[in-house]
Image (cartoon, rainbow, N blue to C red):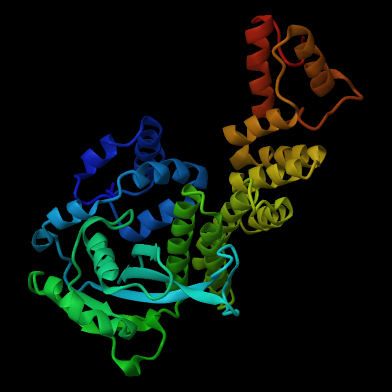
Length: 414
């Protein structure tokens, strides 16, 4: 586990989390990762994080939000002892991500409009195309030198998951930051050799994705960049920042779609399609949330497309059913869940089984209502026959029947 707060040990950071966040980190994140991978690897770890349910990431993100390093903790961190990976490099850049109205701050756009000012974002990436820090500046206009220096220190001492505190071998500054170098130098000069820093040369062009001479045009690179965008989308969803989550999921979708148009190999296609399905299903999760971004129709379209890319992805069916439910189409919701549970790889998916029970209005607690429920779903020739051949659902109802009516009863004999 990588601590969000580098000034704490990993174990200390974990122990400070609430029990629900600890459970997510220990079981759904750490345990599930090591069940799939024999060793810690940044690329596989990033892929694993991007596949987590945004609802789980919301629990963790909310908890880690309380562990943000203070100015005092950043000052106390010993930057001279941070580990360094040989031949590693970072790129720090600051750029406007959109425009915000001065009189009406809720009016935002990706393009300039009269009476607007730019909104700046600061990012620091490493050579593995993982984002160590991504912050939207709290003040309007270009960020000042002291704030940029604070962000740099945070990237070293307290990077985003799954990275741990470290220094790069070489730190590249985008040329737009050149005017801040004088303010950075007193800190940069304290960092130990072989650390060095450079400003991006003017003749490198505007595409910062080519820094360090690394070719970003390959399908594999696009997939890795998309996984990072999905991970950031999950983190934003965890903070209930729907605008940012949708932006990252949409960027991931665009990257993956572009990769798919470049004739991927048979080995690349499964990972590409699975990533697209996760991206779309996660974006659907944002659309079904209450609030200004609530859009069941968009959720439905994303979830449907996700099942086309990856037919055995349970969360895609769950969100498709949720979208139908929000649209008042209860029967369509049931049909989706039944279809999903009839797929061999999803037959025991507890989340889908529970969702099907909910779609039917829940399994009754009253003995009389339970008998009527079972008779309609499992016995009556003219009843609702859809779930009769769904073993996981039948087992769930059987267990409930035996709990309420006794061990001699079953869903088909009440």
